[in-house]
Figure 1 (cartoon, helix red, strand yellow):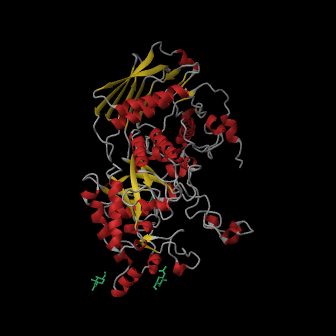
Figure 2 (tube, protein in one colour):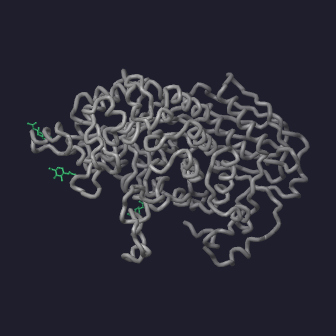
Figure 3 (cartoon, rainbow, N blue to C red):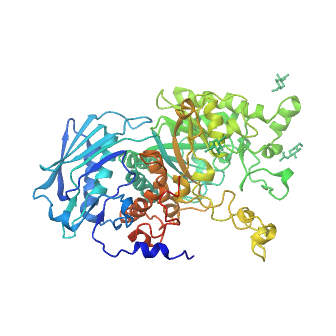
Length: 602
Ligand SMILES: *[C@@H]1O[C@H](CO)[C@@H](O)[C@H](O)[C@H]1NC(C)=O
Ligand SMILES: *[C@@H]1O[C@H](CO)[C@@H](O)[C@H](O)[C@H]1NC(C)=O
Ligand SMILES: *[C@@H]1O[C@H](CO)[C@@H](O)[C@H](O)[C@H]1NC(C)=O
């Protein structure tokens, strides 16, 4: 792909005399000094107040990254003079460097006991003084202090001479726009090993994402070792692709140590076959039937393999209670996701108990069947005997309220995760009074655009350019070369999403935040990090400090150098993020812009 070279001529200014510091997500408020950096040696951590191992361990990690990487950001100054987005130092500024070294970090945490739960205060301040030896951090909670460290570790860079330095004076005051900033991993379609899950959490901590939604199982496999039903893991992919209770606890403690909540999901009553059918085949409808996409009247599943819980079988609820209760004893978050998406009515054509139920009363429809699920499953999910604590909040996919079929009445205190119809469904749900987490698939689905994955698909056997078939550029998004939700969502697509723009103030207050799912039909250890990163970092900034500058204008063009830098930083920290552009674009800011006009995106 070639663009007119007018841009290149403008941008090859040649002199690489500045080092940019550009942390991601951009802090809410930051003032930079202009007198040049000072030497840094922040080995000493002074914690004011109660001892706090989470804070001291986090500083050990940040300090370890600082000293082992001696990070050299690669972006140069913006060549467009009026568009200087980076605090930089120049050789002349360098000569003004102070003689004293910043030796210590003082951290003041107001409330060390605040638990890592939804809505906990994550704010922090950092002050790098012009004089003295101490960088001061304040935070309301442990979790804010952790965010301060991931900012600070991006500010301390190599001095080019074997030492470290940091801009000064710097004053940062920072807090997130949204309390819920998440990604979703799926270990049901393909297994993900613990080290790869840790890698995702590392990227999350660096970008200040705070929710890991873990879609534990799906129809294809059940990878969770269950004490209540040991037979469920007969439907794991192998003995090596199982999470023990200890594995789950290890992920939890790894995440908690980095300020990341883990919200488990057991998808029910749809997307349920593996594991459940080992408990008792009679609690799963249409398991292992032909999914029948080619003969639609017999269609039983959105994708292979079929299977949904038998909503009318009382034994289903015994199994659901034990599974939910056991997992609630492991996962400590107040939130628990109980699925609820994509119920396929055709599956229940193969269920004698369901067809008899409909035959007994011709007024019944599938909405009534889903209501039966809600009426019988919710009391299990909300019974404090089945949960760790009395603060359980349930999440569901929006389908239970917005899809056809949907339940007649779902309590308003259940948080809806919306993935269909973009802003339209956000409006529908919030205007109805539901709190929502926004995962609109046309913006935030990270698995899209890698082609349809089902086999024996004659739609790929096309000997002409698909565009020529009907003149429709979208023609090949289905089976003819695209996934159902193609195209691929780029970092710009993610960042530009003004998901709350058409909401009233009251509706907007019901948006808890955002989450980017990475469904794993086509992902496992080998691809998860490159599909997740650095795109999840665009979502991170969108939800931390937003996609607008102080004037209320879209700042995606400003994000360019920041996310390119951050991608390099992720890789340096062991997160296998994919490159977004030729590295040339990182080293020549704006050379790779599509438009010269820096206000082209509004
Ligand atoms: C299920 O059975 C009904 C009634 O027999 C029929 O109309 C329908 O086509 C079948 N399949 C699906 C997918 O609903
Ligand atoms: C038949 O189903 C309808 C719709 O759910 C319900 O209103 C009605 O009470 C049912 N009748 C009987 C006799 O169960
Ligand atoms: C907001 O509403 C306007 C007018 O109805 C519409 O044109 C626009 O597409 C909507 N934007 C979003 C993000 O929903």
